[in-house]
Length: 76
Image (cartoon, rainbow, N blue to C red):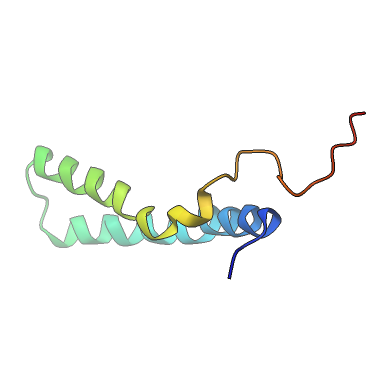
């Protein structure tokens, strides 16, 4: 099932406003559970988790910043 452009925009907004803060809280909790590792390991964990959250949602964010391809062009 292909998502419409409007649905992609709404879903991406939901992901950024709801899912991402929850993911950040989980990532910080995970690093705290490690017992405060050295700063370079902590940085690597945060960078890895920063990329990891977006991989499953790549299809949602693809093309969201572009104009709606299905919209009529009323500039004539």
